[in-house]
Length: 187
View 1 (cartoon, rainbow, N blue to C red):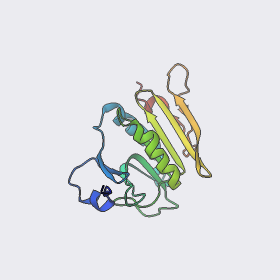
View 2 (view 1 turned 90 degrees about the vertical axis):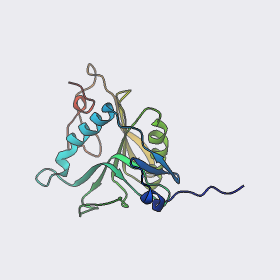
View 3 (view 1 turned 180 degrees about the horizontal axis):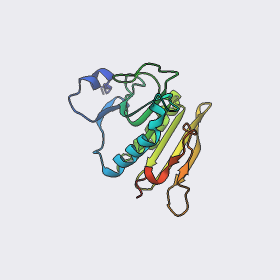
View 4 (view 1 turned 90 degrees about the horizontal axis):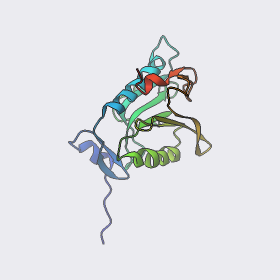
């Protein structure tokens, strides 16, 4: 029996298809974009936009749909990822090879395992300080903080307009009051 050849970052860069990523040495297609997913992604982007501005509290590079190289066989494309400017002072370009300070994944039906287990374990193992997982279907947000070498829940919410405060502070962005109603697309 022959050993399976793992795809690498070089194979990924030669791939002609769009919306692919490298997971466990395999080039896989990303799920089709959906409106709930896109609204949450843009809502979070809007809420943290002030952190990217020079005239605001600043200090972050935050990018949607960014590929991050963790190893030769691991290069996922994150829904959102951020780097503190103190660690990455110049504007990034291309595939990121620097470990993010924050990653946010928004689950897609049929792909939850990738976000909730694969990415969780990869980011924990490589030392990404903060990881958020958001489920549009369940209206949940779970924020993890790396403590030593293990993720611990630092914030969690199941959004319900009747019982949840609309403005919250979520690590690593405690300086901001984030509007959950806006993030989850409530009018």
